[in-house]
Amino acid sequence: MSGSTAEKKKSRPIASSSNETQVGGVTVIDHPLIQVHLTRMRNKTTQPSLFRASVKRLATLMVYEATKDLDGYETTVETPLTETTGVELSQRVGLVPILRAGLGMIDPVLDLLPMAEVWHLGLYRDEETAQPVRYYDKLPPQNPVDVAIILDPMLATGGSAMAALMTLREWGVKQAKVVSLIASQEGVDAVSSQFPEAQIFVAQVDPTLNDRKFIVPGLGDAGDRIFNTVDPS
Ligand SMILES: O=P(O)(O)OC[C@H]1O[C@H](OP(=O)(O)OP(=O)(O)O)[C@H](O)[C@@H]1O
Ligand SMILES: O=c1cc[nH]c(=O)[nH]1
Ligand SMILES: [Mg+2]
Image 1 (cartoon, rainbow, N blue to C red):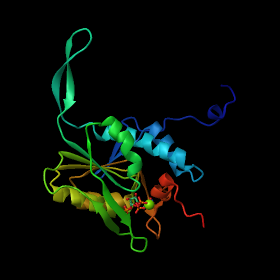
Image 2: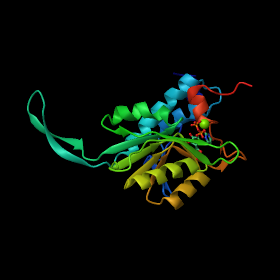
Image 3: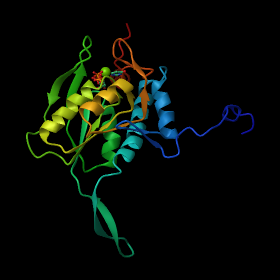
Image 4: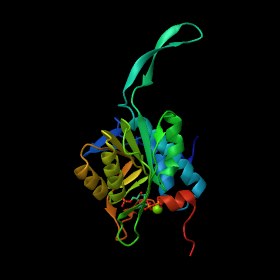
């Protein structure tokens, strides 16, 4: 590989050794693969097909880490050779994608948790006020899941995540996790102060929001980039 671009650029470890950093109530999951896929998503020239693929890859890596405290029970299994012990999950897990952009994360997460229930929540941000507007919610009145995992690539002001957490609290969910790819510092501060019991997992926390409450540097509008609905005018 002599003379390759990779060799000419200075190589260094790009993730902390533990791969997890606690910033306030937020777990930042730091891993070279996470950073590489996130960089593709941030790049404005990345086309929707690669953007979608990157969302899926990141969702898999993030949810793998975010589910490491799930409870299980011991079971027995017959291999072709003998009987041995194994594990089954013992908690009812609900995945809660926030429409639209959260839909981009659901398929890879269902691959990891095929027994999970999926409860959709429709929320969009009003363009003028940046406040979340509810337009779809079919959560049942009773019988909450044991663990709910909110899926949404972006956590900007935190308004949408807090609206979702409030809905889950009203349903009676005892353990709620939020898995986002990019958050703003302001957003994670707001969510962790209003919902200190919620576990928040992000790949990176960006420093600011602009005057339209978009994350900076961020990646633009995740829903538009996933679904290829950027207004060309
Ligand atoms: O933290 P907040 O300030 O609430 O912003 C984050 C929300 O904004 C985006 O959705 P958007 O309103 O663009 O809807 P969409 O997914 O339908 O595009 C994103 O997917 C979050 O749901
Ligand atoms: O930066 C942002 C903020 C909200 N929603 C997005 O998709 N991106
Ligand atoms: Mg959007």
